[in-house]
Length: 419
Ligand code: SUG
Image 1 (cartoon, protein in one colour):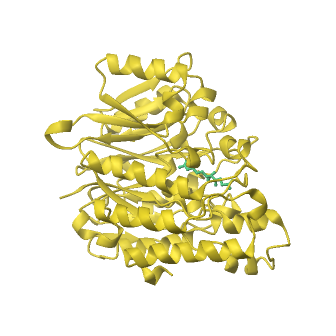
Image 2 (cartoon, rainbow, N blue to C red):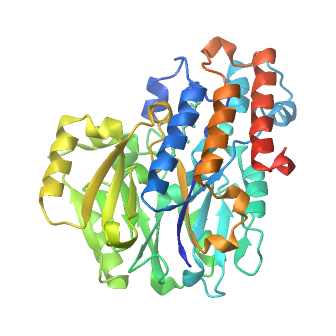
């Protein structure tokens, strides 16, 4: 059965706050703080468990090998040369799997296969080193060539940040969709990480019908306000686009362009006088998982999995309560604690990559169930460092511990070949 599977990134044992992402205000604000990798990974796991308990299909990707000593060697560097290079090699940023790849389901592609393009993530050095190891994992998880095609990343001249700038509207996940590609125009004070040409290349490579794709420019003011990815200001699910009123360069033009190709569009727009762009970005209201609940219990209802930071904000809470009191398509709000990831600018939606496919066609080692979640939790509790202070980044003993922790997880999951 074709369904949406959310693949969350397990937070790696090297999770730390080095403030590496210019334009990501949360990461900048928390730079230099002590991180808590064990708590971070357990928070992520709890989010996965809660979504599974709603009857949703859940997958995961394992942390990439860190510290990335090959990258440091390629830079002619070692742990003492430049703390920023060391921090880049230690980053656990692959946890944000919304940036792992862009995914087009089989129903949208001319050849009837699900297409995946790993994101080159070239704008940020600590992220640009992710794709080869991400690709190795995608090739294992989606190895079945009858159902999946995995492309090379688009050429590095054109920045691509994956599904964080991509959305899909459809009547049901298994039905053909209209795919949305959101890009930024460079020239502002913060980098526009998604290049229009990268988006267009992916649409072509994925064999999408031009009649069912829409290219949209991000509002430059949103990038300036800290929306370094579009999923910080909007999210789509089935026929609903949940968006801040200032997400796109031409807001009404965007709705019109989508409606021309997907007439059933339902826009749930949050006006700036209810929640300002700054408050939306601080609380990550739109970095929510907008989920269609399955079966009789859910009855096709949509739920919004928001970070606790949203629920705790007075203006956001007021808006959400007003929404629930009305009769819009989003019927439930589920706050989750992913504070450790949030402090680096990654909310519930950043932590997952959506793949619409039949779970039977995916390597089962990447699919979660309760027993596996228990095994993961035990490994995390036993091996993930409790905390990492900034001065510890680069420490040789800690590096050994981080490497061992990851191997223990790979062992527990039968994924030693990723070692
Ligand atoms: O790329 N943070 C990530 C957050 C990614 C969020 N993803 C989505 N919006 N889909 C980034 O800016 C901070 C790491 C550091 O500074 O150490 C970081 O990479």
